[in-house]
Length: 284
Image 1 (cartoon, rainbow, N blue to C red):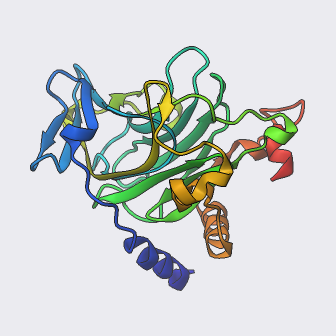
Image 2 (image 1 turned 90 degrees about the vertical axis):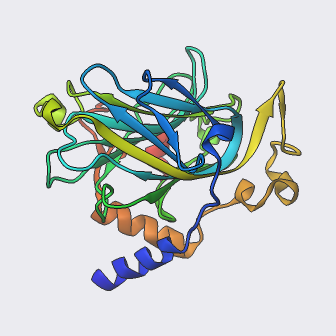
């Protein structure tokens, strides 16, 4: 196990995203000065205190892409806080692809919460612990979204795959362009042990840091995509990510993460779905 973990970490460390410019790529949207762009626009920080959290969003909308961001999460006693990093479309029947990092008491692991919404409906949660301390350094969190699948990855290691199962009636995000959003906020009514552990404001301000944003993606502007086509046959002009799938090595890495670090999977929660598990769970 230890040698396999070491191999994964070495492989993950080779994944380097090209640095973006936060002024060019993002707008700070709320927080009254608590969000800051620093270091010649190479670094963005979000802060949370008792009065307010903070957040930002991408200038661009995307319809498919491979999105990378390096995050360093709130250190120490982060109980009650949530750092959210996600793709989302507007409206009441929105699509959304979620990373949420649920804080915890000092010494306890963060919970990495993932979800996929289509047409305003989610309920597809999978949760994980991480195999490292996400507060000690920056790590790369990636979303691959193409017409066939959505893959969540951490330092290049896939942790979750949500396949396009439209053939059996499962909606898949494919028509609604999404922006990237991130926020740091207080959710102590539910975030840590179901709301039992409250935010300790004596540790405020809480701060999360971001760097090395990279997007290989189809940018949506004025009703048109920057990609040649949104069909799977257009890989040559759009890039390899557009038809990327998990090879055998990454399938094994995914199984390793899910066996050792997954702590909740909606696809095995029979009490939650007494009438039967969702269709995509029965085929995976």
